[in-house]
Amino acid sequence: MSMYAIINLILFAALLSFLFQLTKLQWGLSRRVLAGLVAGSVFGFYLQLVFGYSSDIATQTLEWTNVVANSYVNLLRMIITPLVLITMMASVLKVEEIKSLGKIGGSVVCMLILTTMIAALLGIALASAFGLNAGELASGAREVARMEVLESRLATDRSVSQLLVSAVPRNIFADLSEARSTSIIAVALFGALFGIAALLVSQENELHGTRIRAFVDTAQAVIMRLVKLVISLTPFGVLALMTRVIANSDGDAIATLIGFVIASYIAIALMFLVHGVFIAMTGANVKTYFQRVWPVLTFAFVTRSSAATIPLTIRTQIEDLKVPAPIANISASFGATIGQNGCAGIYPAMLAVMVAPTMGIDINFGFILSLLLVIAIGSFGIAGVGGGATNAALVVLPAMGFPVTVAALLISIEPLIDMARTALNVNGSITAGLVTTRLLGKVPASEAHGLAAQE
Picture (tube, rainbow, N blue to C red):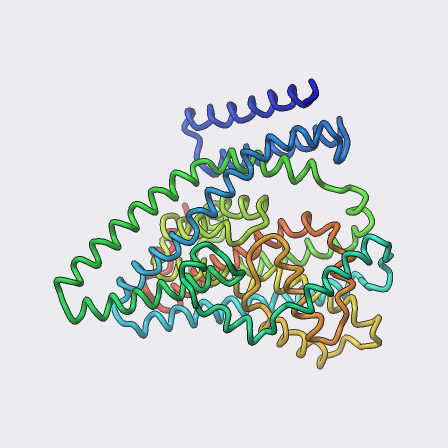
């Protein structure tokens, strides 16, 4: 390791120490996450500007900063399936009537699909307004190679109907290890079924019911305590993750496709406003809401993983927004693989609009209606991890009769756009939880969300 890399790591250690001192100063989690975000951005720019993009020194530095970044992400992924399983069981046991569970699930899914279709409309509008055309993108040897890889993936990918079937658990132990892209949904469904069975047994035998509830309540308390321990490390994880994101950004690739980047971010920003409208309709204070969810959105932004953000999403809904546990668990779990506003809504819609002119197809009402239908169906089963948007494109583009070439051409700038898309995905699932709470009339809106307008 070079002397410069060692100096960089000393600087990184100093930044970690700085964040630790903020904890001693009683800074709130949101402020510490923001400090980690800013510090990581500055350190990442320092690595890129001083040593250059993908230089040996930057690579050596990131090799060790990634120990912090990857360890934190691994810790979060470690608690995802136990959290979803136990909280789903506990949620079902607390539902007074089994039919209420169906209402919650139906409302969450409908909300996720509705917002995804709105996001797709925004993607269509922005791509058309900016005049984006896939025919204008240069296709070099690297892009052709990527296209061939995507085509091979497409040949083996499952149809939409198969994706829906794969969400049904077959081997719960395999799904607990996240062996499939739909494992989170499968674990959530198993937890619901187990909870329903436990609820029925409780109704038949009071003694069994007492034992079951005691076991589940204890397990949930332990899991939630574990979640708090891991989430307390978020500022350090964000520092390391943001360092990697900035240091690895390819400026040339971004400049080449700046129009697509700008259009994407405008569409994402507008969709956040749409979420704000839905949140306001629940009677909640929008400003307070975004203050509460800021750490969650920040983590989603730097990790590009809706699935890894599930523990934070559930905790924030229950503790900060006062969403009932059954709704919080279902919206977070389903939102990671169903109706992702950014990855399964905006992105494939923009690509389809870019490809349509090259195929001699007009962007008319019939085309838009067909595209929205395909996107709504195709949004089921898209894995909530980095690259999920590309998987969504592999479902939507062939269904519309389009080639997947454009997805290969845009892979080089995917990480930059995918960060904001992931934050939008997570916010969409939280919004679905808030709206469902209001629709089902669990408690008055301001009390339910803990978001009454502040004086």
